[in-house]
Amino acid sequence: MEERSLRMEVKNIKIKNIPNEDFKDNEYLEQYVDELRKNGTNIFVGKINDFIDWGRSNSVWPLTFATSCCGIEFMCVGAARADFARFGWEVTRNSPRQADVVFVAGTIVHKMAPVLKRLYDQMAEPKYVIAMGGCAISGGPFKGSYHVVNGVNEIIPVDVYIPGCPPRPDAVLYGMMQLQRKIKLEDYFKLPEKPETK
Image (cartoon, rainbow, N blue to C red; front, side):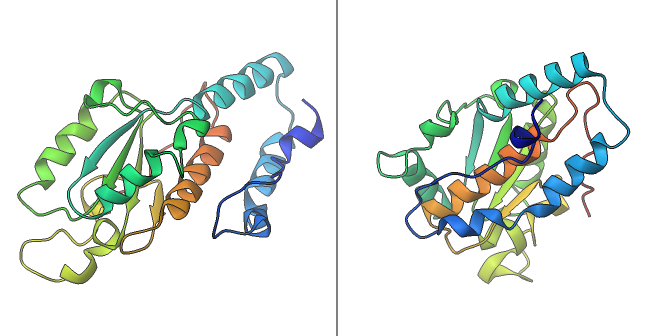
């Protein structure tokens, strides 16, 4: 594979509130790729791996787990103005057995936590989690209260955090692109270990 394609160049991404320069702050991903490739990779396996990861990163099927106002913002991302169909994410699933990523959008109460854990366990590997909004990340304005889980990472491992209350559609698109970058760096033949829950 050419060196240029390994650099994951970002060209003229048009998101209203995020300038193009903000997408170039991820040098650690390129350094990670360089470190992995230092010892050499079997070319045949490397090419197939890159091709599979490219396809997987551009055909992610989300499972929506929207419990409050962040769910409305997730709907906005699917609408015509933001349109996440151009990233291949438009096939939202209602069954965990058909989904690749869980968008946890909103407050998770202790009564709902076992349901979320069961849905996550029913998903097939590889699976990912995006915590969307202050409530899903840390409990939001309800942090420390008796009924709200202080961050979804206490229940399931989280891959990408999208801060905001609620986050704007362009922030959600940026979080989706960060997950795509993570998927493109995975070794398909050896899945990575998941981040640990608390």
